Amino acid sequence: MAVPGAFAEELSRTPRLTEGPFYPDKLPLDTDNDLLIVNDSITPAVGEVTWLSGRVLDSRGDAVRNALVEIWQCDHNGVYIHSRNMAGHSQQDKNFQGFGRFLTGSTGEYVFRTIKPVPYPGRTPHIHYKLKRNGKDLLTTQCFIKGHSQNERDGVWQDAGDAKARALVTVEFAPLKGSRIGELAARFDIVIGLTPES
Image (cartoon, rainbow, N blue to C red):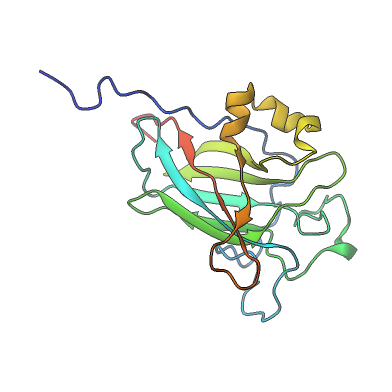
């Protein structure tokens, strides 16, 4: 008698990485998956427009449905939407939402429209991720730009582990095929370990 998938190779889990000090201490009124437009504004945020997508999977490769994917990042000036941001509120891009949420469907897919991350003093460009399901935190991690010159000097990127583990959190930001305005696309699949209660 065979059990389907009993001998299937388990996928490598996305490394846990620090949340950092800038998870929003006051969530913006707009928390949708379009970080370029705040509420009904017609002025978009400044930065390289990026379509950031992926799938949330368990270690068997099955899609994780109803996972709340949260992302947050600094704006093009290196300012987070946090009371203790490094660059100061005076330089904040008021048109950048800085935080977004997406609830996965049956395929585990998520998508955000945001900006390509930028460096700020002491950090390579990155986007923070937090995944939740049924009110429980599943994973906190970060996504980095493949080939960026500051990755090797970034302590958090190094903390991901060996080269194989760092590759799991490092993705290509490439030109979006067919875009007439220079948009980018990045795909970051996230593999989490689920317990029966998750």
